[in-house]
Amino acid sequence: MERKQAQRQMDGDEAVHHPSRNTRKRICMIAYSNYELDNRVRRYAETLASRGDDVHVISLSTDQFRSPLEDFHGVTVHRVQHRNFDERSKWSYAGRLLRFLWRSSRTLRRLHRQNRFDLIHVHNMPDFLVFSAWYPKLTGAKIILDIHDIVPELFQSKFKTSLASGYVSLLKMIEWLSVRFADHIIVSNHLWRDTLIGRSLSKEKCSVFVNHVDPKIFFRHARTRKDDRIIILFPGSFQWHQGLDIAMEAFAKVRIQVPSAEFHLYGPGDESEAELKRLASHLSLGESVKFFEKVVLDRIADVMANADLGVVPKRANSFGNEAYSTKIMEFMSQGVPVVASRTKIDTYYFSDDVVEFFPSGDSDAMAEAMLKVINNRERRDQLIARGYDYAERNGWDLKQQEYTGLVDALCAGQTHREQTDSHNGQLPIDAHGHKDDICGGESVQDLPRMASRKAATD
Image 1 (cartoon, helix red, strand yellow):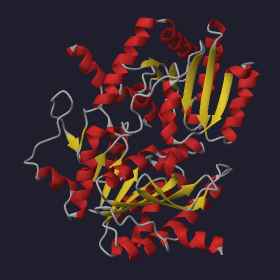
Image 2 (cartoon, helix red, strand yellow; image 1 turned 120 degrees about the vertical axis):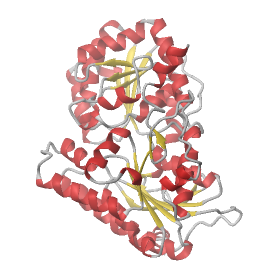
Image 3 (cartoon, helix red, strand yellow; image 1 turned 135 degrees about the horizontal axis):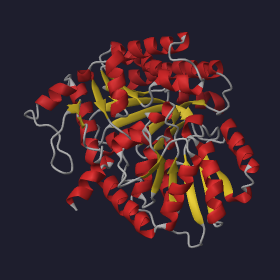
Image 4 (tube, rainbow, N blue to C red; image 1 turned 90 degrees about the vertical axis):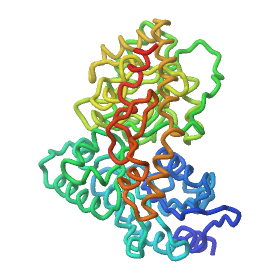
């Protein structure tokens, strides 16, 4: 009986209601991720819920003991499928995606009959998850497809496949169909926007929202650690394009000069972790390298605040070259200096004034950059101060009105370009008063080289 009741909850037969809420819009989000850990999805959903909207999220669970239905910070979360990070092939991964497509589509159809959603916001991966919203679309709901990662390039990088292969061509066709099914596309950075405009979508149909820091979570947390260790931190996935093997080799060189240094990695505990542990053992790093389970989003700021250095060692000859590093601005918000590889995307958004860059793939250069920040007090203080400033001027509290404006415009039957026109043709103005070209609501120059501008005016 309890199992059947839980299944009915997962399918949307029993919903958590908020009778006291002053509902303005009814919105459902779908994401093949754990909602509690997904910064991007939570930022959107909780922003809408905080203004009184009725927000539901259909998502995964990575904790099999957690309730399939929960009110989480004012958002009704429906966990319809459990996931273990043990996919050993593209086919096992695809099978789980298709199962989630079916379950989310069934749950959304039942919820829509109860709630009559105004808008469905679907998050990739995969792109084809947008088709789970077929029933609400038939009844007039507007559909947003939020492209966190461009799938063909990620597939090519993860499975070492040629971009001209049949698999990648199929993914590009799915991307093209998915984009046309949606009413509006959100892209997670400007480089990928340009790629998608070149092959799948029109400029008028897209907006860019990078992963801005949410000040409700990433406010300045107090440092509670008082020992003399030097903690170097990496939180995130352990995929090959992240370059953690390079970071491990660099750390081995750093530890020779800084014996009190420790390298802490927070991640999903998948097969990649086992490979990194073998590398750490091969390098005789012993207890100086520590692996921790991925922590919930609400705790990661505390973890960061107690680190001395954050590292982002992505490979520039892979998918990581254009994948925006959310953790850079999160480190900045907690006063942690950042050492990062010089990738196309990170040099687009950040300058040498706010990040200590090193040539991607070079463990010797990474070690030198880490030692420079650790040993040079003046450089470290400069990175901390300018990083704080950058994070404050590019926080979600300054960008959330663009997102809620997009939602309201779509629900009112306007395009986002029509919404811009309704503001008397005024373009957004960045923190320095500059008017810049936009793509569906986000200034292209709000983020890139912001710290350089600041330095020039100081």
